[in-house]
Length: 267
Image 1 (cartoon, rainbow, N blue to C red):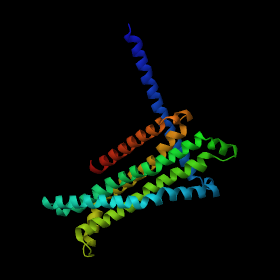
Image 2: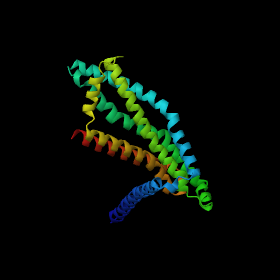
Image 3: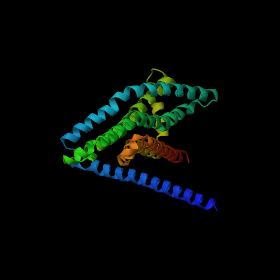
Image 4: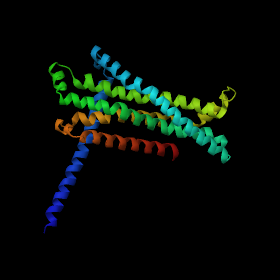
């Protein structure tokens, strides 16, 4: 007799958790759609918003660019050396460059850049948005006739996306240069063969998958942490539940995007 009430309680808790899960993801999609409309609307870029956008883009990219380049260069040199030596030991030296490009440029660099920006830029931006909500700064902007979504949220999200895209683009170029120097040294004689080897990897389908993966990485990093705190009740920010939920959601989406890209590239 006692098992029936407990089963009802467990079922009610499960149903409530599922409802909260769906509501949370719906709020993220809803905010993403709103920000997309604002980003494509020329009226969003008034003088104040442009100034905020320029400041946020600089703060999200410039301080982390050098550190990420140093980190990615060191990791790239280690991985390039391991791959090249392993390929030589098995008599597969002709495939070493293709393996390096696939491992570094297609897989590791976009994933590392997304995680790096998430921890250094997106999470602090989400904390700033949460602090503004707690201190009623959003309410003050509304009373002044200013849309806080356009003035504060949009610039931070676009800055997060720009940071991921910039780090991926610069790091990929640096890794390709390091791969060439590691294999061929300081000579220009092998540029033609190296270009053919790299071009053989970047087929149209691979380029499309790489571009889509990088874009969705940047979108997830910029959107999910801010969307989680934008709709979270203010009382929840006395705890760390919203921040943890944002991290879990972000990592799960990044994992799904990476799995989809692997399926598209290798199956």
